[in-house]
Image 1 (cartoon, rainbow, N blue to C red):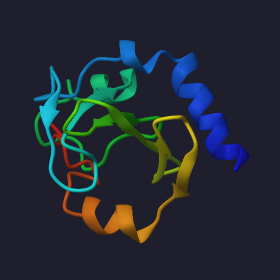
Image 2: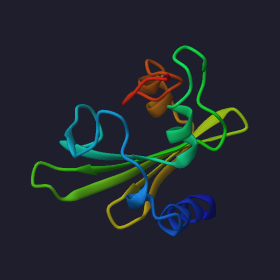
Image 3: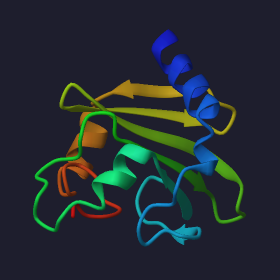
Length: 128
């Protein structure tokens, strides 16, 4: 889909590898579930600024939030890139294989079912 291809182009134009690392993920960390054996997690400035909010002051991540996860297999080979982007109060998930081919985009039950346990659907770190 064209929207997924645009997401792929946008994360590289934004230089997501230069984004701040997610709290608790300052380096590559082990992973459980469908996202490989280890992950690098990057957050955009919107999330980074939100993390500075007073504890308990946010009930949801703001629109414009983006979390990008590079997932690696046991041999440290990139296997997928997962993007969560919040727009108009809703998260959109886009997942790509290592070559940048989109696997899906939207809010599939596969994502929402697992991420529902997270802090406004973000499982890797909590809202402030």
